[in-house]
Length: 224
Image (tube, rainbow, N blue to C red):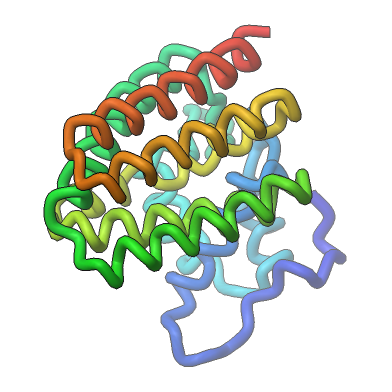
């Protein structure tokens, strides 16, 4: 961690400083800028971000509640290691919640929402074609934002939000395998096909298959 790097400086804008610090540190962790197991020194973070120590401490507490950081006695906060066991648990819960969202979307979404989801899949396919993981992650978020909104169930996104940072980490792991990309977009197109057919059960099963296949790739990489 170099304290002379200016790219993570928190700008004094209207949003609360704590929120900016949390988001900046969360992104640094999920993007791999701060590596698993890396020690996070409060003073270094203050210098790097240009904020006070209380702001950093509050942010670290929030990130610890998300599972991104763990505090070790006499060592302080470290970036959490993502174990295969943790990943398996996250995939189990995520799979059921996202499959339920797909099912509800097939039942309840408006024609306009279905069209928006279809457009998002086209943009996602283009991102997959680029092979750039960052572009894919942005396009995937757009797809799931539409899917969750159209499910008309406010609890599903609320529950997923508590795991969102870990889900992003796992997406990055699974998508880091070039062999995964063609299968991934085929699976998402299968979800869209079931939704367009207004077949809730098929949408549920297609979504489950997508998460199961992503899980296989990520688990293999995490066990290497």
